[in-house]
Length: 342
Picture (cartoon, helix red, strand yellow):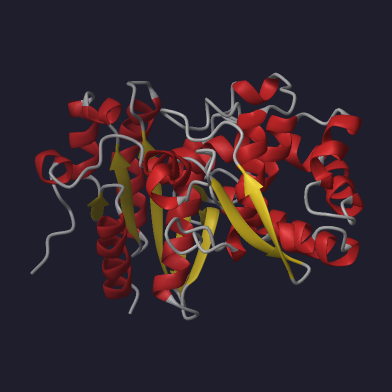
């Protein structure tokens, strides 16, 4: 039988300890999302005005003095092609794209039923990444004009979906160039995509990995538990002996009929006092929840948290289920919830 109320050593053996890469990427996106939304209309206008030929956009970018790195960031988000995919593309560039007679790399693509050719000006370059393209969080605060490298990446993200290289470099989503000059379709495509991005980041703000961590767990539980369970973020459970108005707060509350589970989440890669506060409350919270016939669970991870071994041990002793922050552990939590909220 699987053990759910683990001790600190058992918990640590399942822990990730450091923030998952995909969560860090979502947090980075959340931090730049306000800037992207603020400049979305200007971005759309440039795409809508590019009607004559596919490369007209580059002249419009220069004329409008729109930051080329910000324009590229919009394309990265819309095509969901950044970070790791860009690095992989850079490493394999010479194997993916052909060369013409003068030694320049190029790709051909379809635009308005005609074949066009784009010849790279700067690619390939060594160590291609977000920072080199000035689209990481820090670099976006400085405007960069269109140069050969930015122009090359913009061309790839606009047009490469219809190239012969699309399958080799997972470029199928780099398709917004097919909509150039079509204002209605562009507006629908871009706005719908940013609605999805906003949901992915969970309305997060700067330095909010903890908030995103909760969002990931909430989304996982909603999908895995189904409609018979209600999953509430920042929920409350009313308890006899707990006098504060509204009930006892939890990061996540899961209910089914008259039964409830309260879940607390803490992921800290550097040591701080949050886990000490949760530890100090653990015994009383567990006693009141048990008295009412409810259960309490903790999602605990992060190298910083495990430096506070006494606090983690206290939480483990006063928890009905303690899991770490990985997808496999979310499944353990979900299975436990199903078993106690039958």
